Image (cartoon, rainbow, N blue to C red; front, side, top):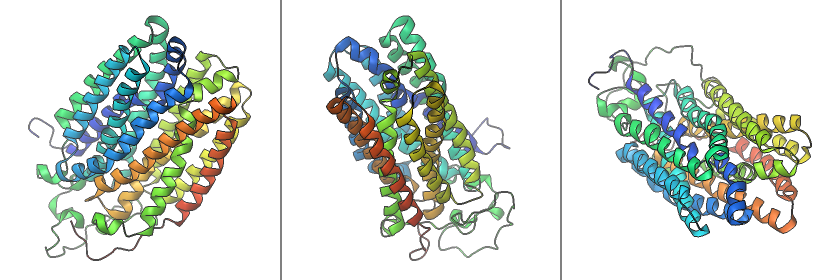
Length: 440
């Protein structure tokens, strides 16, 4: 791009813009919505199930949209998808600031969650995966770190705004933030892939580029020198080995379906806890201020785990790290069930934040290491749809169980079982053998 320093690979600008979008997209996160559950529920008399229903409906619609958005990312790039998603989230936040009815809340938050799960999440990490191979783990981690940092900063900010000016002002603030930090950078910076700008993956010179940047019918070049610093784990190809799978071939591999099902299952535990966390902690005798601190710890732990997982994934198997993340999620659920003091609540926040964020950042890294970057948007769109359906189901399960029994305990016990079962599925999802020749 004209005016940019030539020594800086343009992919880094793409990664920063994607991270800024994820930061602003914290406006649609369940971890932020949980701060509005009590003030909005008290003002309007809404039940937990009614509020949960809006997140579930938006998630289902987002899941329906995600596979199509993924195909658009592969064909046209993420810029238009991210700009559209950001505008929808901003408009939804402004609508929530003015809402007076449950129907209005449902319409606005459904649009926000649909754009979040069906557009923004599909447009950020897959695009970064297309710009990087050697440093894919750390750059995707940067994107997810942006989302975690958004919750860390915005959770106490939203609580302060609610206390000073009310929940309507808090929603308006979130909408404005999305326009400035999300929409604008995406419109100006995001591009589809390095080849569109005459660049190579990782900014490599032509003589040091990898196979996947070379046309399929070209003569094979001598293999590039291997830099020992980003060592490859058992699931990680070297730059000159990365296969480029067609989507139809991906769908024939058992590993894809095992990965998809495990992500769907474990996602029920994530949303099933997060949306109801503040009300649950309040029932345990913790103050609203303590609950906000716990959310911040949850997000800080997730942000740290995101960075650590990104770097580790360049050296050891992402599948193994995800397996450990599932077990960590199950442990966090056990701690949540037995919480009776602030120290145990802090421990839960650390464990759950690390598990959730680690799994989220490692899923696209694992898929890219298995199937390459050419169909990354389509693959991630399908697996993200499975996760989103899990989010919808989990939040609804917790709400229904609470309204039926007056307690979240049965739901949380179920989530422990689900997390352990998911860990077994991910162990079986080994790196598949390539089907047929490399193709685009």
